[in-house]
Image (cartoon, rainbow, N blue to C red; front, top):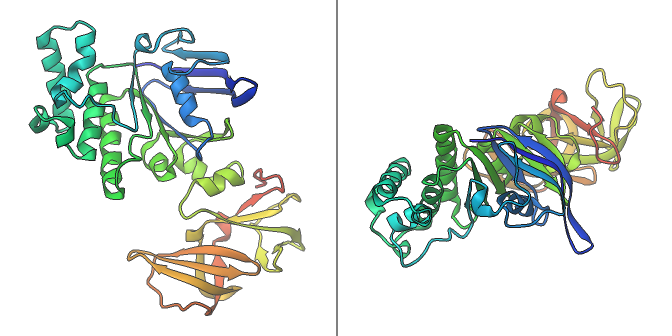
Length: 348
């Protein structure tokens, strides 16, 4: 196991910069998720860690060793790809042990390592099968097993669950998290799915446009997003953001709706009022709104409503009978309000 240090790392293709002087440290044994929209640079950064992309500047250290010019196979990392990357003519056991075979390990050592990894991943009954005889989830476990047998200092995962259906993704999320808790190997995991990031990571790195927007524990990012981008990217459904201005101790939206301010707020820069859908309720007293769409999910009811000139999402734990066009009043948890400046940075 080892820590990973990224120090002022940048990447450009010709004159076009794609990674802008990124710096962070991933502690020994930590599970860190890189998350952000498509094109934000998260996979490029992961490939730079793996040595599959050259860096244009800065320094990458794994276990204290500078690896800028070290070949991928010599970095003591193992990478799990989105596409599984299994050899179709090899059995599960042969796929898992192939890297050890290339290193010149003897047959007994390879078989022992493969058995141990197969035990961890419940692959023992499948060792003699070919990849075409496996389901998507089984193939992904084989890809993980191939990484485990190498016993690297760092695991790198590049959107490994994106090819799986929704139910299988939930199962595999739990399996990968359980695997990390057992092996305690430093792990860097790339995903565009913020639910994966929230449920799996010790810390999340939110990226946009080749830059880091915020780093923190999942609930830190959820409870205190640094800006409006993080506020809307972390959390599902996304945080409601209402533009407006302060007026006589209240926040008045651009649509003319007056909303209460948190106690003790002394700032004068709030221009965006944020509240998460689960912190809104339908009550006898509150801001007037009108129902647009009602989506019952069983355990929750999701309501899209018009508040002034803005659409807001409400998540209710109760089942409630509402009709499109129905007038309602919305109350909110004043202790859970988020305020941002016109530039999108946090104001409270």
